[in-house]
Length: 303
Image (cartoon, rainbow, N blue to C red):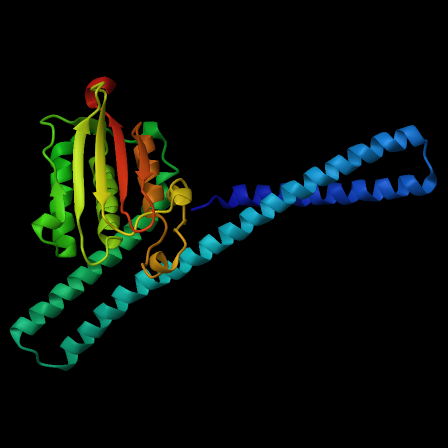
């Protein structure tokens, strides 16, 4: 989460700046009243005027940033309320039904399956919030690294995404991949990154899910590139860089109906950067799908 002490220091700084501006304004007005020497007054007046303009500009920028941050926090709280309450309410409803009624075995199994899926959804939401809080505090050196075969990991994640979202095999197509694409990193974190991108691709694809997953080696043989492409709602060009910010969600009537915390892509970027790589997003515009590319250094380069 955003550092409380950092925000407190920012507020103190800009509050002090406001007080200094008021003092300068008072000095300027008093100076004109008591008729100081004209030359000195011109210099002091010019300096005070420039300082006031600069201070007002800084304060305006700070206020706009705070307003946007508060809006993002409010949107995050609303989304988290929905993401946490919905599965809990669903589980409670099915438990009360099982407690009060005698149901046939097949119906009971159906209820158990729904409750398990809701529990998984709840756990994923909690894990995402906890991961977002910890990912920015752990330094790169603090992570335990081990060889990770991206080829196996991508196939595993694609299978899991199909199962989790009840999709046929052709919905998520994995292109032929290189035999050896090994990186050094945390396998659970990398798995979480790939699953996050796949789940997003499914979520923003609408009714027809068509996702292409491609893993390739860069011509230099120093990096592995993982592309996840969908035919979904797309991303406006001016939003491509903002989507990786904490709590940020693309505004719009379509995306507004799709629930989310605004943390997923922030976690993706943080984890990939700690592994020495980078993540980028491309889209031809609204309704034309999007492509997310992960670039990670190969283990042979790091070792």
